[in-house]
Image 1 (cartoon, protein in one colour):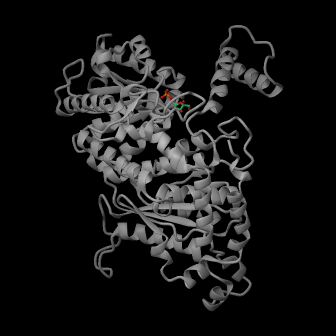
Image 2 (cartoon, helix red, strand yellow):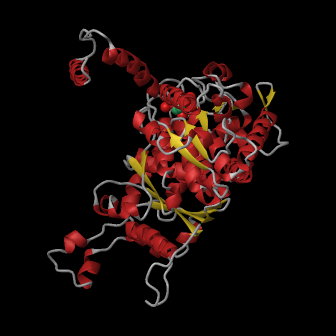
Length: 551
Ligand code: F6P
């Protein structure tokens, strides 16, 4: 395969690096009064303003040519078609099929995947309907008002993020808790506040072998049997979401209480599969279907729009521009939407487990960065924590701001009578727009002096500006918008990986740690003191730990 960094198109982008140092965002905006609207795209319900990025038309054109030479459209078509593009695991990558409408046509490896998907969706909706209506009863005959989702990684981060985002739709009195960590504090804290008689446990695991999930599931199961007084209680209090029917049966959950998905759904791409069951239980099937429609809207946008209007493609090209050409190492995602507070954590798995690769698909070493460290926090909290570094620090950190026009709820910000009520949501959004402006345009020394700043302090008050950001504005945080946002970033990751020639769908890097944890567990728990077996650091840590545990 061609190494993208050896192409003329890559060299052409490289040659434009110097040019962006010669202009500022102030100048680019001054030269082109239409830049704000011209460099914005619409994707579904999302208005995505790319104009405050460090690019000229010439740079954007050159970046787009990188996508062409990497055959991005052909690679995209191969994914949507169900080719086995996850070559190291010989699997199709078909999370987009999870959102196809009933009746759509997609046969992969001899199976009508759309029928399979909708059969499971129908079962999920029927089950969620029974639980929500009170038809499904717990072992003691009480109705279910609490869900515990036990899962980790993609079997946790997606559902918990969407669950928080759709808080406003949880009107039927069912609340979910999410337990992921093998730290017993996670499960214990949850079990302490739920009543097993009215609680349903959803064990969510693609493989149903993940150590953390299985440990939590077995511990929860023991607790339920003890409190409810019978093994029979498991049938009405435990359901599973998995691809592994045998493992689910071995755990003791019967096939009728298992919701299936398939090996062509990657863990971090699985929230639109049955992994979203907890969300369907708390927010209801219609909201979940609306969420899927949102995903599908963005899938269609990605599949059909020309590169210059294609939001995921443009955002991926900007990611490549900043990391491979301008030296950025991280990217901040700041939702000015409290209900999206878990979105940055969700994106960390989506992007970093996908793009954390150092070899290309053919096994050859890459000679360029493959992805950014994603991080973030809800605004305005971040402003009082790390924004100082974004504004005046020495590192290049592109930012994605996310906001909505119509809030789920609003409150007056000030005591009534003080120049009329100010909405807290308006205050929030004013902050978001202000941050993007200050990052882009800063404040010069002359402006600081003109404001009366003491000349000795002026250097400290200069805001360099020219710091890039993208602003994503949605009408409201509807389920459809949540689906569009998730799919947007899924396709950014796909495009970035496809252009850079890496596999975004395996995660071999996490395996070695899992294997070694097994060996370490034996060393920590062995009856007799183990012989030095690791390295001098690990051996002494094991010894100190064993002593502290009285072993
Ligand atoms: O961290 C590795 C990983 O395999 C993730 O990709 C996945 O989302 C997570 O573990 C959980 O896996 P499972 O759903 O099989 O329990």
